[in-house]
Amino acid sequence: MKTALSLIALAAAASLAHAEPAVIYDMGGKFDKSFNEAAYNGAERWKKDTGKPYLDFEIANEAQRDQAMQRMAEKNASPIIGVGFSQASSIEKAAKAFPKLQFAIIDMVVKAPNVESVVFKEQEGSFLVGMIAALSSKTGKVGFVGGMDIPLIRKFACGYEQGAKYANPKAEITTNMTGTTPSAWNDPARGGELAKAQFAKGVDVVFAAAGGTGVGVYQAAKDGGKLAIGVDSNQNHLHPGTMLTSMVKRVDTAVYNLSNKVNPGAITVLGLKEGGVDYALDKHNDKLVSGALKAKVDAAKADIIAGKIKVADYMADNACKY
Image (cartoon, rainbow, N blue to C red; front, top):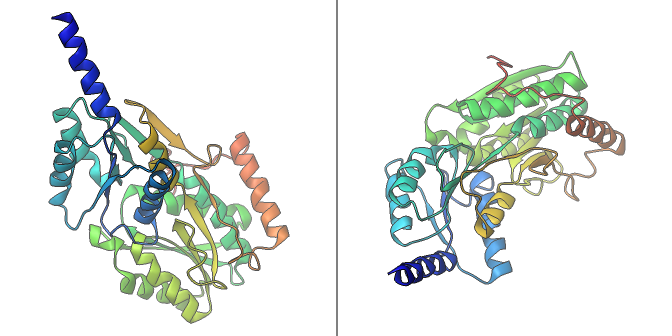
């Protein structure tokens, strides 16, 4: 009997070892040029490097979250990676119902023995692009356009404000959120309207942390001869000449690493020190970011990593209360 049970356990382990990973994207679609697309790129890199397939699903409405998670679990996919904080309750249910499978979530903590949670120090990367915005602004007025008005996006805005004020204590920051429902992630027309309204008030650099909505912000900046800052993925290539930089959040690396190995029960925190966030400099924006500007920002980056500069976290430090 003991031998039979051992064989069953070995068979189950072998089955799990050969299971396909699955990625479930958040609202906005996997080609949002931002958060979801970063996750997709990570999965594609894993596929290319390993030669193995993976499963994925794009959420079209809230009701599909539980269904998608259940379907992937029934297919014995493992690990099942939920992209975005909104996947938390679905992962909690599925992880409990399928204890032998491994799950992971990005941007939220789910405490379960078979779930790894990956969160980022968005405030640190946002601090750096806030510095770049303030040091590049000719008016001393910079803007922020968020997607859905949630604490996570306020975390971006708070870091951005701190960085701008660090570079220029007299800087004025205008903050707008697109909406209070998930549709706020995919409304480029509204994003463009908010950016234009900020420009009309003297803002000449705007940072968008709004998923697909950001595309409208970047277009408005191009049309108005202003500067924009991208988010999550490196979006510098979208409008070379008016994309000042991007606050890169390595969701792609997180998905890639999780597809290789999940640390069940772990909470992984990725900031500047871990290479989880940064600002993007490449051929598309190198003429906008001077050597002197880069030196100032890199000095602050080193100080944040060394603990000499502490960037307050909106969600933990009662900072930047709007």
